[in-house]
Length: 171
Image: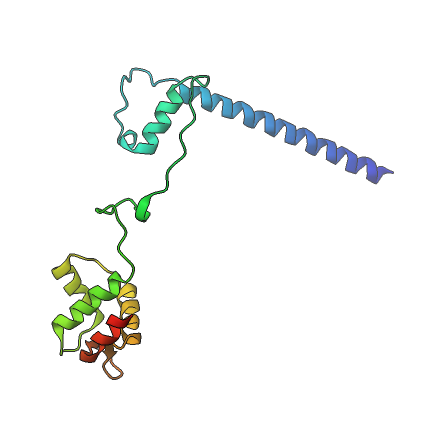
């Protein structure tokens, strides 16, 4: 009997604790909402660098409007070509571009065998393309499967195969 009374007391204490936490959390969130809806004292226009970014500007303008006048945002349209921040062009490179670029570098350096670091340097210097070593290695594997490039012996150097042009054109 004493054990059940103790468990009931513990359950009641836990329920009171949860209710107090929920009430405190709700009050804190309300205070934050009120604080963010008020303009800063003495500040006429936001001049912080974070305010220049799109999301921060939209959030600031949405917070400045009273909650009754807020409008719903239109649905976002799908980005064409998977454009991401930091890219200069609006389009994603076509499938197989890395292999084609690596093949062009191998052709220009033929018949000499070259290492992936030399391929990367030539891509940056001649084409203005920065390519990761893993992407170069993957492209070399694709070219090897097409019999357009071959690894020289057991070394880490690669060279262009002269007879692989017809095989690449058939794919």
